[in-house]
Image (cartoon, rainbow, N blue to C red; front, side, top):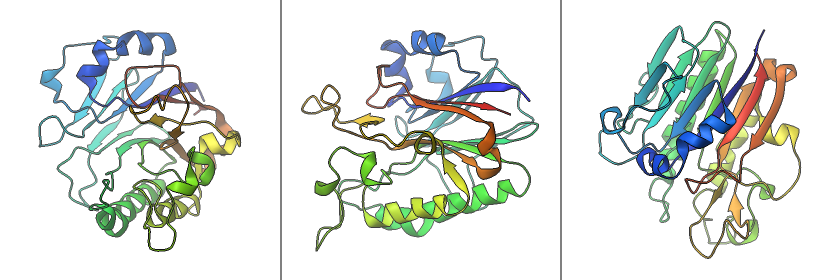
Length: 261
């Protein structure tokens, strides 16, 4: 069993993030594996970086400049899977799975319900159930670590202003904090998958995303929507789950998991 460090970050465009210090940030944190969401690029559009990560995998959206995921690893995986096509069709590059000797690592960029909630029904009825079914099927074979931008603040502690964002009366709630989205995270929590940050830290004021408007980040008016979740069987091997909120380059902060595995 070895200690590994895995980083997850919605970079909101990898090319822009590189110009804002991405490489220096990765070299300062030194993760074994880097999981990225919202890359907004195809591999050929990005100059070669971080040569110490020999194993690089990209799942880019068909639509240019949109969505997409990537994983950079120092450790060679046994197998790589792009998407979850057995469960749901996805042309937006939202999932990559690496299989290692004794676990699966999945990175995911969950669809945003959009400001007008036009994708909420898709998330609630199709995406979220399909993704959880996929994770639980992997668990039949090996424990799972999954990470990424899940585009939901699960509990009131997970955002700065819950009262103005949650479902009430005829107001359906704002995207990322509707009852339907939170119910789908209930399903994750109730299926023996552990939200590692909240398992270790019950304090308020820890967020991973801030609006670019009204100096939200400086004022820490944010949302915790980026997660590392692990199979319950890995609970005793968990070392730390930390938000690096001082790392800039995106409107999201990186989150880092350390685990013996």
